[in-house]
Image 1 (cartoon, rainbow, N blue to C red):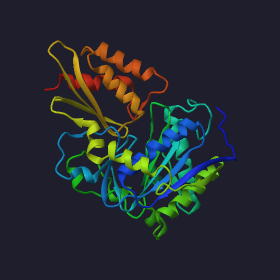
Image 2: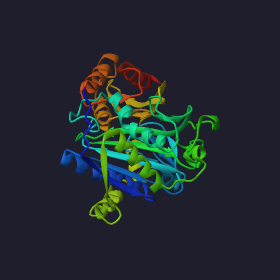
Image 3: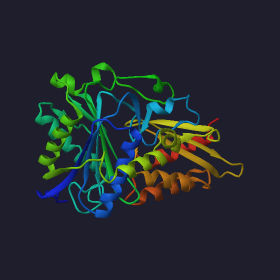
Image 4: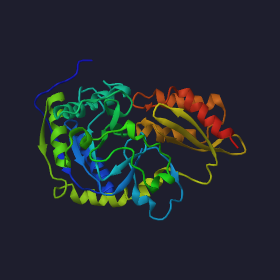
Length: 357
């Protein structure tokens, strides 16, 4: 594949030093729809949240009944991956593109799923290196400095093909941070020796706007881009963002899209590349799968997970039938689940869940 490097490409840049998680999600959703319709260009958004938050991967399940007020301290991303601290002291980045290969090619499937993060993260590395931080992408979902974690990356591709690449950088705090929400949602915080932050590396505090400038410079250098600043606080998307945040991304409603209901009484898990993959499942007396919920530290396109869970309902609860559903779902070129060694591991985990006590 010959990667494109069009020096005349202009992306939009939005900087939101303080935004609510719901409005942040809504902004990326609306921007994604816009770039898909335009079939070109892209939007970079750099933002900050207030407070102590736990940033959940897209596919992490939460209890059907959260403790009162707990939803306000949880934030579910568009993309999958690990559960990590967020909020004060962290800065978020999203890049919205018309398809998963748009940074480097006009062909939507030019990049294999496992190549997308490798290409998308390069602007972050370039930007951080420009200010003296020797950032490195060792693979999977981490950004490191001298083998210490300074950031996380992930991505989602929607049913219309539009992609949201997401990154979370430790600005003045680091990924050892813990708080009460961790008691109800599984997470594995890193040890102090395994993390760092921008402040530790530079000895000074950077603002969200400072980081936006650094990242824009990195992506401009790496991909031949220029940026046009847009205002999401007063611009034409403001009213739509507010309404979508209220209707779709209100914390309790967005979190409840992946809850372990009482009927999903059987469970199994395996260790995978990013942490843990889990299956919650139940079958009826006739030997048919009644429901399945897949959860954990995985990166996937959301339609693949939705389709796999939908097709599993009514499937015979045996290896051959389940394996057929898994294989056929992942055979679709647009579909992928990263972080799991092979499709058989998905089949085996579901089977173990169905046979568990």
